[in-house]
Amino acid sequence: MAFLLLLFIPAGLVVACTLLGHGLGNLGRFVFRRSAYEVLFRGLAALLGAVAVAVYTWGMLHVSSSVLSAEDGGTDSSPIPSCRTPGWKERTEANGIIDYSVDYVPLRFVCETNDGGSYATDSVPGYVNPTVLVLALAATVCVGAATGGPERLADDDPVGNDPEDGDPAGDDPESGDPEGHEPTGEAVEGDDPAGNERAGKDPAA
Image 1: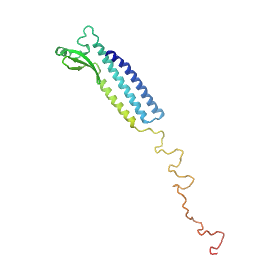
Image 2 (image 1 turned 180 degrees about the vertical axis):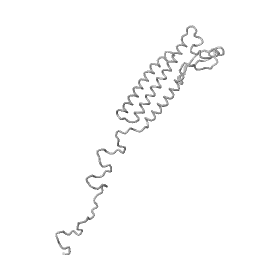
Image 3 (image 1 turned 120 degrees about the vertical axis):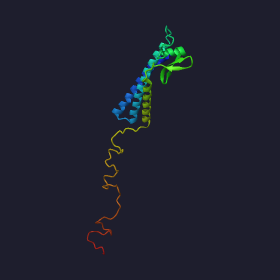
Image 4 (image 1 turned 90 degrees about the vertical axis):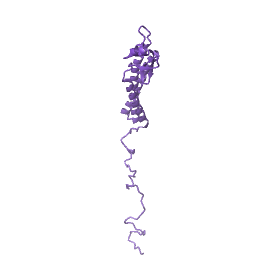
């Protein structure tokens, strides 16, 4: 188990660094390239995930130290040194500490007694599990926001009008009619509805 736990530590560091690079890259795209808001939320989720993995890996380092101490097998190895927390003598006299185990969620080092009971030691700092939980929840919220969040506008035109079209209403600038209406064919002042010429002819002739 100790060897397996020691493998988790470099793996956690690699994952944390990968998430950190991914998050910073997305934030850079959002700031300098005016990308969509979902890019921002993806970046924040990656950064929060990186910190969560780093804190969890820090707790795993403490657990690995306790496991190495428990598997030492040298003198003064019984009861398990990592289980010698406040009150361990009473536990030894009453039930006896016979084994240990590791819980990964929440992360803790657990000592087992011969009556089937168990108790967690203080090997893992008290802030590790709450911090990981809060960061994981925050990252989940950011992932949800990235999935359904609004996109950032690429320009300052909220209506989406064509900037090359100076007439937002679609009017024909050559028609002179702001409403774009067609001529109705009605007679205008000065026209001769009877079709008479204006050369001085008598309309009765």
